[in-house]
Each structure stands twice: as C-alpha cells, then as structure tokens.
Image 1 (cartoon, rainbow, N blue to C red):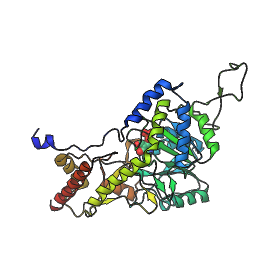
Image 2: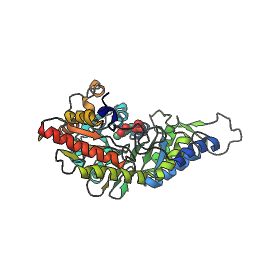
Image 3: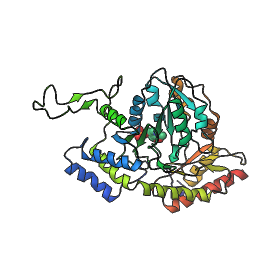
Length: 401
Ligand SMILES: Cc1ncc(COP(=O)(O)O)c(C=O)c1O
C-alpha cells in the first residue's frame, strides 16, 4: 500500500459508541460477586426507579432491547387488523415491525425537510377513522415537535409511542424524551449514547397501571401469588397471569449486571450528551459556510442528544453527487461516511408485505441526498477538525470538478 494511504487517519464509526470508565467496569465484577441473583433483583429495581426519576415518567421497565420495549408497547396499545398506525418510513426497522406484527396496517407519513422528523402536519394528513396510534421517532437524537402531535392524539383518541432509541436524555420544552407519550422505548445497544454491555432497553409509561400490565408481560406471565402461603408449593411456585387480554407474554428481561452498568451510565448521560453537542457544534460551525450541506434544524426549546450527525447534501452547485462526496472522503481522506435509513417501503422486507408502492417526497429526497458523518462519544478534537477540513475541501473539489 502506498505510504500516503497507509499513514492517513482512518475515521470510521466504532461499534461501541461510549466506552466504560474504570468505575463502570468495576461494577460488573462487583455485581457478579455480590449480587444474590443475576436476574430481576435489586439492580433492576433501582435502575428502573432511577430511570423513572430521570425521565419524569410514571414507571419504567428494564428490558432486553428497544425492540422488546416496542413489542410490548405495540401489544399494550391493543392493536389489531382493523387498526392503522402512523409512523415515519425514515427510521430503523424496529420502529415499524412490532406494530406490523399486531396485524395493524402501517401508514407511513412524510417527514419535515428541515428537522427530518415526522410533524403534526404530516401526521394529520394520514389520519383516518381507523388510526389508533402514532409512533414518534426522535431520530438522530432530536426531539420531534411533540405538543401539536399530542394535541392531535388527544383530539382523536390515539395512543402515542415515542421511539427514544436515539435520543435518551434529549429535552423538548423542558420535558425529557420518553415522558410525553403513552409509552416510550429506549435502546442501550452498544451503538447508542449509553449501552448496557451491548444490548438492553427500557420501556417507560405515563400510566402506572400500564406499568403493572407490562411487568406481567415481561417474564412470561410469571407473577407472585398474593401474600405468604404456608404450603408455598401448592399449586405451584409461581402464578401465571395475563398482563393484557389476548396478548401472550414475552421473556424480555435484562440481567442484573446490565442494570448495574445502566445505573452508572445514567449518572453521566447528561455529560455524555453535552459533549456530543459540543462535538456536533464544532463540525456544524466549521462547515457553516458550505451551503451545499444542511444539518438538522434544531428548533428553539429542543435539546439534541446527537446520536448521529447527518446532513443533506445539495449537489446542484457542484459537478458531483452525494455518492461522489462519500467516495472522495473515503478514498482520499480515510473518512467512512454512510447513508442511513432506507425508507422502509423501498426495502425488500416491506415490499414483500405489500408496502412497496409508497413514495413520500421529503423522505425520498432526504434519503437520496443524506450523508452521515462518523460520530461517537469523546471524539478527539483533532479528528473533528480533520473531518471538517476534509469535508470542506472535498466539496470544493466537487465544485470545480
Ligand atoms: C430508531 C430506532 N429504533 C429502535 C431501535 C432498536 O434498538 P435495539 O437494537 O435496542 O432493539 C434502533 C436501533 O438502532 C433505532 O435506531
């Protein structure tokens, strides 16, 4: 390999976005050694209580992934084949599949071209007499404009599910994401702002009764019998209950070690997000005079958690395309930008379920021109400056051909 290629920096998304510090690592061994149980014990209870306080919701349930939380939310919405669920198509597949699995019809709504999120205006255009729920995805870490969506939901008696996988700790007008809908789902996968050792999630609810229903669904309907029983083994050790009529329960538990790590990370989530905002601001400011690139608009009162840093590339003033820009950055600068969130209706999976004929102009335009820059917690300033300088000169080269 020529020296210039082998010695240049490589800037790629790491698999793990936020590394554990020594104290967080130590809690793993401490929990293994000292915890009386490795499942459903004190760490789970404490993680849930602390999460509830942090988010400002009624109750929280630690679960195995955000997808698990969304499966439970979809079940608790009581959806069936007669119902419709409105959601964006520009999102990770998990925002949609749990709702589709209930038999409900997915109604994909378009996104706002500036925030790249679903808006009340687009939701309203999709409402029908069959609409039963709205899935709001705070994509890339930016909270959606919730007030008008919540108003619509109230007027039409709809459930609201927030997909907070990418926006833990983000704030909308003084409220945390995950505290506004009927249900919300968080992800602690290792590519997220905080991770419980690779996998994990949280379901939050705004009604404590839903919390109890969800708990009965979380571990296959296993539930203690009421009160002490002298003949404790009769008829069996545990009761089997129904959390929700017509819904079979799941096993979506998160281990004690994972909950212990989650508790520690929750304490520094605000600091992690603040640092990610500084990183994003550095890049955004450095590229503010490159008009071909437009980053997500952050409306007043929205605090971004910057899970990802994405921009729309307007190639018309240049002689290249978005793909040319990505290729230049990869080939000449070692920066591996990517393109994300294929509109679900364009994928083989959703086409196979009959969703292939949909086209949404803002969604398609953004996807076809979007670029996602490598981004993780604690990126060195040097790397950020290198990336900004490289992007600027790559766009400049495309302008002159
Ligand atoms: C928007 C969104 N929703 C849901 C998920 C699913 O998260 P998990 O991997 O924890 O199931 C992801 C993961 O990438 C996501 O980005």
